[in-house]
Amino acid sequence: MSVSLPGGGGGGRVRNLNHDLNLVPFIDLLTVCITFLMVTAVWTQLSSLKVDQAISDPNAEPVEQDTPPVPPLTVHVRSDGLWMGRNIEQGKNYNKVGEDFAADREAYPEETQVVIVTDDGVDYQYMVKALDVSRQYGYDKTLLGGGPASNRAGIEGPGVAAPVPG
Image (tube, rainbow, N blue to C red; front, side, top):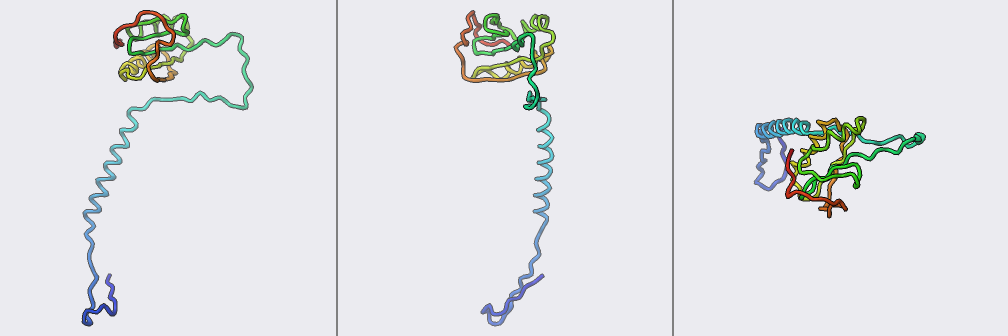
């Protein structure tokens, strides 16, 4: 493919604009990019958790309950220890994840929900350990939360120096 333009002022010489493009570097670049994208797309699927949304039909009739619902088991991982319980009055401080999961499972065998709350600054491994132990005891529905360090949220009792993985 060539183009000749009249006039140009070069003494009547017409300049040849026919050039061959070397497409090999462009093909190499595309091959590397496609390979990289395909390899990284696989890794995004390895570390995923199954998450279900608890959304009910807004047009459904409300269901009347004879007994009040049982509050979910709450595990609060703090920098000075661990607290577990279904309410503040009955909750206890622990120094190891999983000490009270078996007793709670016996008391509430049908419950499958646990709330795991961590304070800011707590190592990620302790939250994951609490999540793993809760799954071992059959708590399939897990709510995760976190926030700034609390002043024990009104919970009294001795803590430990640092969370101990169980």
